[in-house]
Image (cartoon, rainbow, N blue to C red; front, side):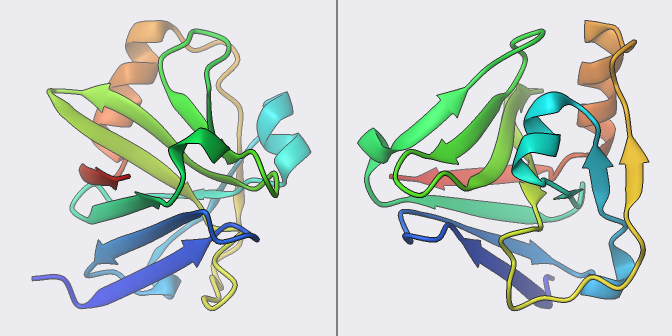
Length: 142
């Protein structure tokens, strides 16, 4: 039974995310990826393998699904305002995700962020890490 809903949206409101979790903001340790894309967007990621997320797209034509590197996930960026919202990956016949906590303006994450670097990670290792750590069930609307 989820007890907490963490919400965010891009600046123009075209993309929004709701994370349903039993965790509070204090339970999350945001992860700041050191790849160029994440650094350029100031992205810091959270996820809950036991949680669920709803990703809402008002106008799909204004959502950019960007793949790079190993092309194993889609980083979704609003074409209108440029906000990086979420990364999605198909694993075990489910859509899993990490959510950029930076646009979560109404939530305060007090645990210090940790720096992550996955440059040397194999594709198999990356997919296994995501299977274990990313939010377990994502519904996409729109």
